[in-house]
Length: 353
Image (cartoon, rainbow, N blue to C red):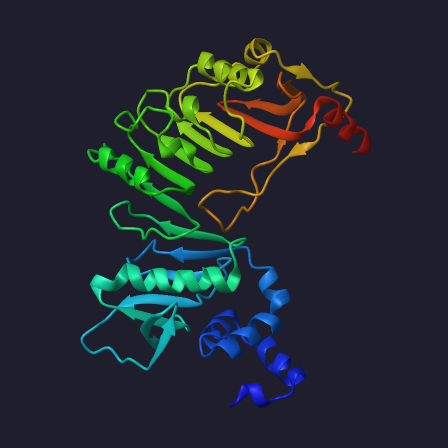
């Protein structure tokens, strides 16, 4: 079918009925076809927020748009009986392809020595095709798998183990090897051997979820510089929680923080004494406080897209800019949600509820 010979209306009708995988593959055919696809599907591509390389279960990633159900591309090593069906030139590199029966998408083939160059060539094509406003993520569950150094790439990792890690220094090196961290979701016995310096990229991740099973305070609580954090730990002294809130109020730390939830497995947090110690301000019980909730930035993307609502009559105010944070203490959990509002704006919100 010679698409370019059809009237523009028919071209649009055909392209509107293609899925992302087919549109991507079609755009590789020629410069004119690519131009047509981009112009015709401008509205659809405008809604694309992320390109995700998923290597959680394999060393050769599947590529998704906004993590929809079907991948648009798969990378794979050559097999001895590989059936190469066609070849395309992408970002100046000739790449062999076949079609995948299992994933219903094209498969980009590579020899082990050219893995990174093939992925980089296609990544550069994505940057040109979708633009730099789209977020590019690499998701993995294995810190021993290499991640290509790609432009504008943020990394997400998730791994948990109940055993005592003896390899945490290599985990720390892995964190340091990636320039941009989107999210880190890890659980292990202790983080004692990880870098305690605030410059560690562990603490610079946009979001973290940490499960720590020994009796020491997670160093993340002291050093975190990102936006969202969920911490589960065996023990956290009330004095550490008070110090955290006071450092936020003074503007000394946590300037980027949006949401934090910390749960101790051992003892309940004394609500009244903690609120008094942090200088919490109270909303009259006759008024209904607003619910603080945000889109999750965490690795787990599927079932609950938003953070748990924080609905509390207690709040604190940051000295430097009069910014408000809701504080909720329930049993063994402290939830802390920062509003993009001054105290006056925050209190006016309740007049509208």
